[in-house]
Image (cartoon, rainbow, N blue to C red):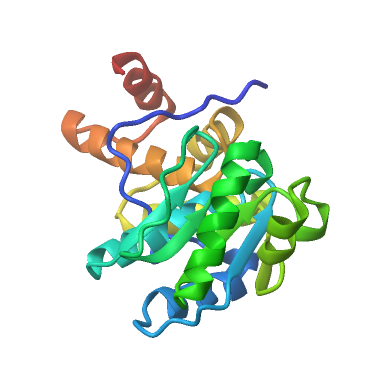
Length: 224
């Protein structure tokens, strides 16, 4: 059955608090301590894992946490075709989806990495593969892998179901087993999308003064 991608405007900014760690608790705790410490270690951290495991959520959550502390960050992902030069005001460099970097982006990432390390600034990066498997220039690949490395795992079906139920209960929202089956079979199953969907369903149910049912979900989608 085809799963529907979710593109909803009411999405909350990613946060470390909203990350549902499951089997990824070690990485989550590491980043909580690291992002919250003004004297954070300059030893780099690299996250890797399959799509939907939470890599981008964690990088954006760290970016948001630092922004709330008044710290500037440098962000690079494959959509940024012409990366800017390193800015000494950056407290941290964030490199997302490094496995997709072009030659120009790899050069920028290497330059950012070297300058960040020289200034004792943090580097947090993420990619699809373990460092040894990355098809990148060797000087960048080895630097990405010499610090803390965490593999992130996609939650299992029972774990996703339990997390969705817990998040709904926390909002005072009742989801029947039928509704849970409908959601998990028809929508993107990564946790960020599921939480966005739950937020939107909660708001739509309040707006229409109706319980969350399959007809309500269909009605919400038709109103988008």
